[in-house]
Image 1 (tube, rainbow, N blue to C red):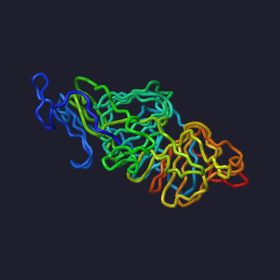
Image 2 (tube, one colour):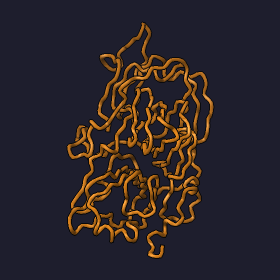
Image 3 (cartoon, helix red, strand yellow):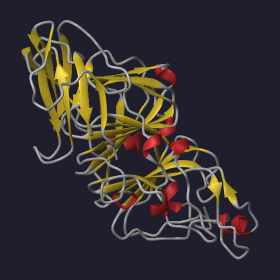
Image 4 (cartoon, one colour):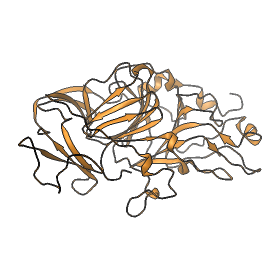
Length: 385
């Protein structure tokens, strides 16, 4: 997904000696898949691993619900109340070994630096704006942006207005990337892709901070507090293809057809075990005989999650902005009663705005999900409902 970028001061060649003020600069390889995957090189004024204290922190494991039955669910996530900061206040709702899905409604600013050592993070800013501060530099975030943070990134997210912020959060245990089918053999996004490299935003201004720093490292559901001798925002330059980036849902170029096109048409990211799609305002199904509505379907090999961000989603009754639905694999789902009749005479365009996550292993609901569960939803397809 990320093209090569460079920022700041760099030596002429990799692993070449570089000094600042007569003192050595420390080179750090920030790489995936050992030494054989995508990577960046960062140049620090201080030794990046120097710490004078390491102590245990909080537990971040999601408390799971004991599931007696497997049904479709509507989670009224819009009812979730402000809690913690953008990291500590994440309410995890759905979990498997590949991804955790939750919503953050922070009540205060994040003060301590954070690094996720176990997962790439995807944050969709449904409401609110922010600035990401990291060792790669400063990256402004607007409402409607996806923020993709590679594992290992030391960062703090400064919110424009914490209690007016609502963020869909994914922790993905594998690499988050653009869909492979969107890329040429050399990795460039194709002409047919629904976005291009011009739409991907990266940090454009380096951060500089002095003195010691406290960093919370998350690894395997546990938090460890590191007290570092040097602030990690001491990078004078970096280059490579691994760095945090942002992409606006409003820059996604939708695809449509004379008849209804399937959800993979709207894919925006991929990661091992899941895909992420978004539905944006567009023309739809303009043939006079077309049914301008999704067809009933059974996801035999996946669970489907939809997070509703705005507009009108005509196929689903009872959901509203901030709702999250979970449709389990193996059981059909589709438009509810009355939707088909309305679609036959309805408009040939949609204002919907939604993020979809399809996982290829079953998702399990948490105890937090139970607190916002719409218990009537599994029966909403019944004529008597």
